[in-house]
Length: 465
Image (tube, rainbow, N blue to C red; front, side):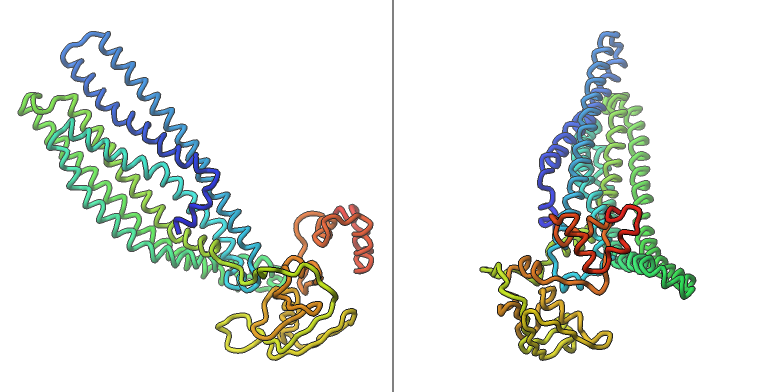
């Protein structure tokens, strides 16, 4: 999954690599500041002059400035990389869907594809943002702060090794419990979007039959189901907070009490005030890093399931492909069905079409009559190879449709669909789907032949409506 998602980084590799490098400099500066501050405190305690204080102050300001600069640059490159990944993922998914056959599209709900290209990609984007910045920053901060805590506090720093396994176990348990819940919730998201899409498309029907109350209850039930799963997951995730607070206050109580005791009993020989202040700062750094890591794990947990759903779309290969040496010319308009049978799925129990034999000569006009659901449309869709026959051979111009270049075949087989769709744009732009180089006169002539010119001309803007 990660390898497949990583292919969409492409031109944003530099930003993705630059972010961790910039974060490293930021963390080093941040971890060095408490150490310099501790030295300054000890110098003041020993009665140093203003020149020494100004010297240390200048160093601290410079280090803070460098940390701020590199942090801001890291934020910029991180935003560029994560937003770029999201853009490429959506493009790659969209391009992949364009190549699907009807059989491939039947495997995914339209609402599911929309959810995957929006919500799922956003989850992956947020996770990637945290991975290249926060997930790099927090471990580095942990390591540097832990080393500096040992340097400054000695044996007191062992307290961090005591709470780390507790946190690790707690986080692991949270992830283990929430993963199945997120998996269920994302599938229910598809059903929620499907309900919205269905209701909006059929709004006229709903209002005509006064079924608003029924649709509201149906949508409410689906929304409640999604809410229930997310509530369960969020309740478990909420355990992160108390666990982190417990570890933070345990460490702080230990450092404050044991540190104060050491300073008083040793009279500053084993631990002085400067070291103690630095140790407190490093304690906050370590624990805040652990808390941020818990947020990273939560985000990655959510994104893991979203990533799998995205990869399903990216790895889905069209069931219809061009032959190795395609035919690029259709000789005539003759059509032949030879013992053709068809079913929509390999798992289907019976054929939609069974043992069809049909010969249509070029120039003939043929009517195919049958009741609703008798597979008239299915028969037509085999001609332009929107589906492939399960058995037998479909020929156009005397050649098996599977031997043609797909684009060549579909350019020669004109289809007026049962359900017509107008894309956003003008009437003229919609007409040019058939021929993008068609002149205005050719568009008008086509509409006259289709008996559409009369009502189009009634619009104030005509073909530019």
